[in-house]
Image (cartoon, rainbow over all chains, first blue to last red):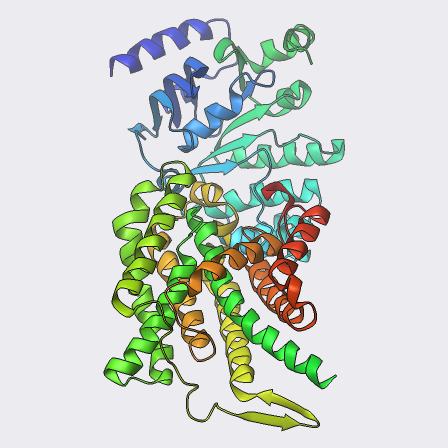
Length: 259
Length: 289
């Protein structure tokens, strides 16, 4: 509880500079990560990281390779046991809950390799996870929104193109009804037109009150979809910016990130 | 030509034993990440239990075909609950050592009780003798063993591809961590999958009983070939295990027939060739290599 108050105080300090962070959303936090540190063996990859995501909010984690972005997502998902700090969803501490319990509580993981099963068809990839929330998309709606997945529903999942696999990975967590999506570099290696389409999907999801925590190296893309940005360097949050500041300082940030 | 067909049948029959066992090994490896070294010993137990049932309780082959897999399922469940489970969080090497140790215990226990000479087991009534097709004489039992293995493999294949449980097992076999992150309690399927894998090894043992010398050591060579099967088929691939099982059975039979001096090494030459061309095996996925 004391952790909670200190983090609120410190992030409130950071937010005085961020005019675009809407005050109303701040009260209903969906995901709250407080004082998270994580290790790989002896190596510390995250130090005292505190971030939060509200419903219907898109928040990015921006940083170079090795800044600890993916480890943060894995910790939230419960896939990285070597960690300290608290992670709570809708006010409930996730503690040591297993990854599958977290997924059923509403966290949807879209890993950086898309995580499509080669031994399952496209339809099976979509139908594998349980439906965890009444707002889950029915399969008909998924197919209507992603016609290509309907066309290819009987193909092995990995016979799809990179962009289609990304669509499938996102469609899968929507079919599940996840309330908080963890998207790990969805735009990586994809053609601009597909990246644009992914942006549309993220805005659609956002409109339904789903929270998105987005790991992105593509600063331009991040600025078109996100409300707030956390800059990570060497396992620490070094900046917390609203999207207006982020866009204004884009050139500087690109240099800083070495991108 | 007639001889060639006979060797082919023998190869397919032996391949059936490999396919059934490798299928079990593959699902256990996939879902638990455990390389079960005791799989050969479980195959041996299947054959020994069949022989003991017949000699001491006059329980025949057909009943054994049903009862032994059930007993072996129970044995697998106990093994998983009492031993394997506690080491799952550690380096996979620990469970490899555990199952290796278990193999030594099982083999020595069977030797203590039943000695080193083979236990007798006759080909069941109705499946003995030969059938002549054209000018070719074929063993009825070999045809039966071959057809039976194919039917079981197809049945398991249908269960894996047509049911929700099968879909979960395939997903967990391919990527256990990701499957948990998609809300599936993979742990719940661990015990049944382990028991099922052991039951398949036991079933292969029953099928082998009428045609092999039933000794405590019969699994020792079997497990080595089985590892070759899994490497050839591709670690983590269920279809690969089955196809490679039959393939290895055939290659082994041709080796014994046409190049007896080299019979012991043909399979490993095949394995080396496959790994050279496709490091992840015939049906393995790239990232697994």
